Image (cartoon, rainbow, N blue to C red; front, side, top):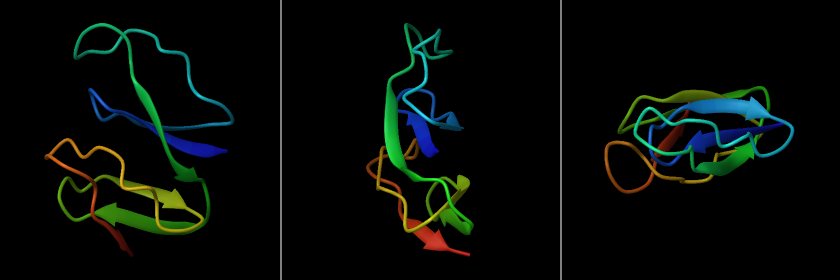
Length: 74
């Protein structure tokens, strides 16, 4: 299982493979980005407050607050 985030609407979900593109609320289709394997460690972005469980520090990805996420282990 991996954590995926849409680059456009910032939705985060867990899936075994890249999710279907579907309809994004920001227009068009979702644009999924793999941000790391699901695990038991809790991380939160200092900028947008997104929280997720990961086996190690998630990939920086695209933060909805601009630039890349800045993950902090909780």
